[in-house]
Length: 111
Image (cartoon, rainbow, N blue to C red; front, side):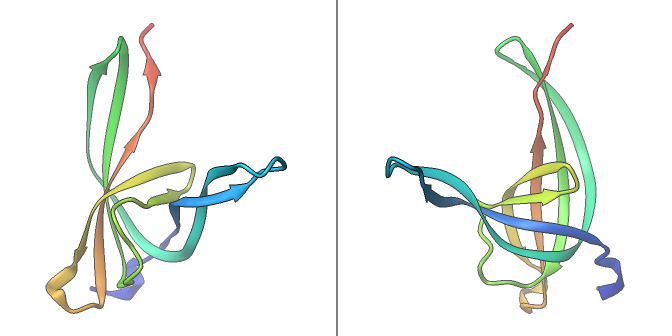
């Protein structure tokens, strides 16, 4: 892969972080892991009905330099989108680049 193809800036977030509020309760929050250069490609989209709402689902393939701290429970912030990581693949098992298969889900009502 040509490193010049990594021209999109993304932020990797971990939803397992927590913050303590003013009364001492633990509140779940997104913890920023890293901001890196990536190649983001939309690969397909589909729509389905769920509870009387039309739910579009867009899939993306995100390629970044290899990192050991990325797992499928994480979220990618790309432009104004939040992408949920579905799978993490070490390309060619060489620990140089990794491919993240992601899905962006948005809710849109009918009518």
